[in-house]
Structure formats: structure tokens, C-alpha cells
Length: 76
Image 1: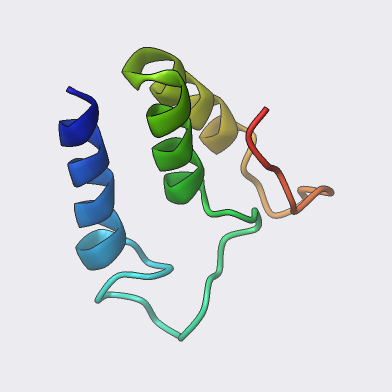
Image 2: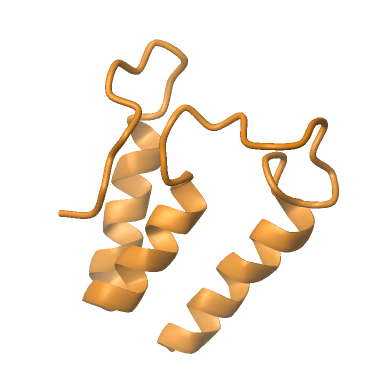
């Protein structure tokens, strides 16, 4: 299950992401966080497993807005 979720995230990053995928409007990232939310979720899934990793990724996405103060947000 973990490998499938990581595969889906990799597919999203490579083909669908507006930051790094083939539809990106400019080179580099437009995400307010480092690492990007998809990379953060992938790292969380690899470190904590599917359920906790997806939960942490969803929580991070819900905190994403242009007025975010802290741009560097590593895994706990």
C-alpha cells in the first residue's frame, strides 16, 4: 500500500503538479512551503506509514495560504 501511495505522489509531482509537473507555468516552485506539500506527504508516508502520512499531508495542505509566516516546515 505504501509503495502505491508513493507512486501516486510521484506521478502527481511529475505530470500534474503546477509547481514541478509538465503543466508548470515557470521553473522552480510556487509553493509557500519547503518542502512542497506533495514532497512532505511523500516523506511522511515513507516515515510514518500510509494513514499517519496522509493525515500529516492533509493537515499541511489545510494550513497552506499565501499569508503563511513560516515557509520551512520539516516533518515532526
